[in-house]
Each structure stands twice: as structure tokens, then as C-alpha cells.
Length: 233
Image (tube, rainbow, N blue to C red; front, side):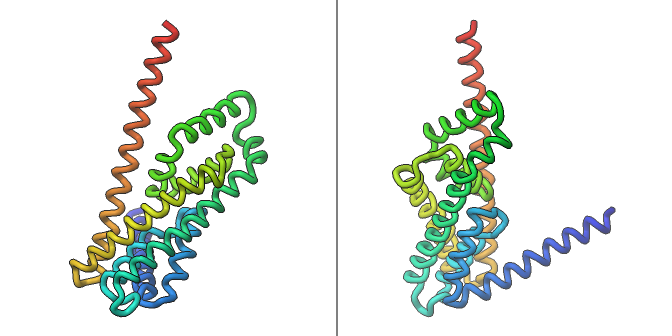
């Protein structure tokens, strides 16, 4: 048993080491912008692609001046624009999938009166707090896919509501990840050290956001339960 666990851990470490080497190598080449766009797009639909890591790597390469020779400012601006564009296209695709498959999903997961009520409640929550939820979910791997999918499933207006908030969300996300790598690379000479420090910081922030969301949901749930108890008393 111990041997199999060690083997799994070793395999995971090898995968991350190879991924690190690949992304760092790609981030030295202008083709990296195309890779960044595709990775950001795919991560919005299939939340197993390392988009944050790629954006941070682009920021590190820009800060170190190796992405576009001696053009760090231009490099980081392009990293942010390309990552945000890819993320927006991916989010829109997730929205479209949710919107187009709504009848099928409703038959599978929201059957009956309780299912319909659950769907209505989800839609109401998105309409009330959707903008903030969309921005917060963008910083949580997997959470952004679930949120954008739910926006499509519950029929939120695409141009007048979803696009406006999602452009803000992806811009904040790409700016945060890119600038984090950029400034750390400017302060730390070793690119690998800067990359992993930035990635560790990003993971820590993601954990704090998720913890804060859970605490707020718990507080809100307790408050609603108390209000219902008082109303029925």
C-alpha cells in the first residue's frame, strides 16, 4: 500500500516537473501567446487545464524580459489581453453549453416540483448576486466553469448581463495572475523560484476566497433559517 502511494506521489511530482519545464520553455517564445489563449479557453470549459500557472508563467517571462526581448511592458500587456480573451471565449462557450442543453439537463437533474424549485432558486441567486459571484468564481478552478454553465442554464441575458460581468471578471483574473508573476520576476532573478512563489501565493489566495465563500454561505444560511423560524412562530 505504501509503495503504491509513493508511486502515485512520484508520478504527480514528475508530471508537475515536466509541466513546469514545458511552460517555462514555451514562455520564452512568441508562440506562447497562442498557447496561453488556448489554455485559458480550455480551462473555462474543462477545469483541469493549468491556466493560472500559464498566465503566471507568462508574467514571469515578461518580467524577466525573455518573452519579447527588452519589451517587458508590452509583454505583460499582451499576456493579460490574450489570457483574458481566451478566458472570455471559454466562459462564453460554457454559457452556451449550459443554455443549449437546458431542456436535457432539466429532465435529468431538475425533474419534479422540487427540481424546478431548486432551479428557480439558483436563477434568483444569480440574478441577485450574480455579478459578484461571477467575479469570485473566476478565481476558483472549477468554480468558474460551474458558474458560467449555471448562468446559461438559468437563462441569464448574455449580452446585457453575462458579457458585461464576465469581461470584468476575466480582466481582473488575468491582470492579477500576470502582474503577480511580472513583479516577482522583476524582484527575483531565478525564474523558476519566481514562478513557484507566485503560484503558491495564487493557490493560497484561492483557498482563502473559497473559505470566505463557505463562511459567508454558512452565515447567510443561518440567518435565513432564523428568519423562517421567526416567520413561522
